[in-house]
Each structure stands twice: as C-alpha cells, then as structure tokens.
Length: 398
Image (cartoon, rainbow, N blue to C red; front, side, top):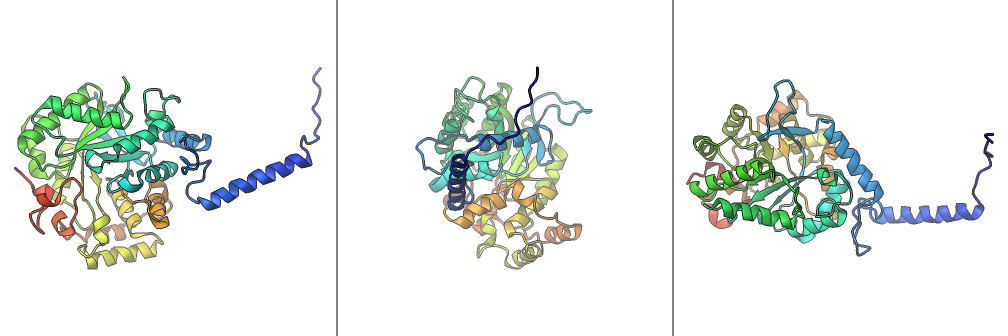
C-alpha cells in the first residue's frame, strides 16, 4: 500500500550552516569575478584544468537550441547544397549576426574567448594573420567543443567558426592552399574525420589575380569535400568580385569589410544584392581615433546618449538593422574592455531599443567614404601594402 511520506523537512541545523557557508563562498567568488565566476564561466585560471561547467554547458546548449530553431539573430549563407523555394532554410547555413573578432587579442586570447562564450557569443572570427588559433584550439579542446574525442554530442555545433586565410596562405597551387587550411584546422582542434569549418574566407585581395582565383577555387573544392560549409571573401571591391564571376565560379557567400555609417560601400552593397552575397562589418576600432570622422562621430555619439548605449553598441544595432553580420572586437586588458565584449554581443545590444527610422536615416546620411589608408587600418595587410590616405583594399586590382 502507498504510504504518504512525512512532510517533515529533512535537514539539520548543521546542514543549514554548511549550505550558508558554501553559498557565501560562491557569492564572494562572484564578486571577485563579476563577469566570469569560477563555476559559471570557462574558469579563471584558478585551477590547472579548464572544464565546461554544467551551468555554462546548459547556457550554450540553450543558445544552440534557439539557434537551431531559426531565432532571428542569424543570417542565411549560400552553400553548395540544393535549395528549395518553399523552404528558405534548405541548402543554407545559419550564421549568427553578431560574432567576436580575435584581431589584436593575442596577449589575452584565453580570457577573451572565455568571456565571449560565457556571454553566449556563438561565432568566433579567426585568421591565420591573428596568430591566435593555437591558443583558441587548446581551450576549445579542453572544453570538449573541438578535438578528436568530443565528450558531449553536438558540442561542436555550439560554435560557428569563420576562418580567414592570409595573403601568405594564398597560392597558385590548389594543393598548397588546402594544406594551409588544414594546418589551421589542426590548430583549432578540428582534425577529426568529420571535422569542418563553417566558413572560410580569403582575408584580402592584396596578392594577384592568379593566386586569388586559385585560392578561391581551392576553397570551393574543400566545400565539395565537406571540409567547409560556406566560402567567402574579405575586403573585396567590385573589381575583384567580378573576377570570380568572370572565371565561371559562384559568388562568395559573404564579403567582410570595413562597413559602417561612415563608409557604406554602396557599390559593393548593390553587387551583393544582385549576386545573393551577404555582408559582414568589421574593423570599427579606428573610427574613434583622430583619423576618424570627427563631426559625424559626434552625431552617432548623440544617438548613443539618447539610448543610454555605447557608441559601439549603436554600430552593432545599425549593422543588425541593415541586415549585416558584424564582428566587434575588444581586448581583455581592463574591466572596461571585458565589459565591452558583453555589451557588444547580441545579448548586450538586444537590451537596447531599436533604432528608429529617423535615427537610421541620420546614420545613413553620415557616409563620407572613409578609406582604410586614412584610418590606418591594418586588418589583413601590412604597412607596406598601403600607398596613401586614399588607399583602400576594395579598390585594389592587380
């Protein structure tokens, strides 16, 4: 016969005291690490081994489920898979609209990655030139997200990888380009039989036509082999984009470039609409420098103040509402930099009221055609490549 259990609480005063002590210890630790607590985050180096805590794993799993359910914070990239007009998702790759760039994060890459993942950033933007793939790969292996023996089924899908091949990775040899991509995959821990990169792009057009087209063809072959899901380019203008079409190859799935209210690249945007190519915004850090658009920057700052947001958050909002992907960057050398990783994530900007049509019109009226040469931007090339203030990689054809 079923016997009703007693309603009497099953704990003692000693148990309560132990619980309070444990809770106090956790609270103290959280205060010490307000962004990354020891239990919740990818740890803070207090122990020798990095582990994926149950709470963080649940956070990432929930985020992945929402992502798989076509949440609105993603864009759709073309792949080489068959499409279906009745199903807009068939044959497309979902890419988070906001990622995190590892440009100039070499000194504190581990902490940058932990903060980004803890704040549900599901896309990481990496490159051979950044020199961070080894460190990123080691952390992701320890977490079980990459590596040959992934302990949790589906963990790989928690992170969208965008890798960019450098000018030195480009080659007139298809075999050599493929070897260079696989080398960086091994660094990232993507060296198992079923390993893949979600997106691989050519970082810049600053080589020559033969190497650009051969490298692009090599990436398409890796896509056919299932090693790459989508193929893109970075910093390409209409001239180098047309090279691809004229060579009889499909248009890139995406083009990442310095795209902001102050340099809207309207010719590239028009080309993208015609060829079903998505656009990604990067390299905003120089906009607030002395070489940036002083008067126009003050107007953006005014909108940010009205919305109780940072200027970087307004740039992210602008990108989202224009239908672009974006990869903001911040280091982790100070508390403000760490906070910026959260603030500029999708979760961070999603707390801010959307830009009104009037505000969007104001921002879209700030286009002054700022060039990379004027800003001093060096994401994908070196000082020797820049020929003057008017120089920009989108105008490069050789």
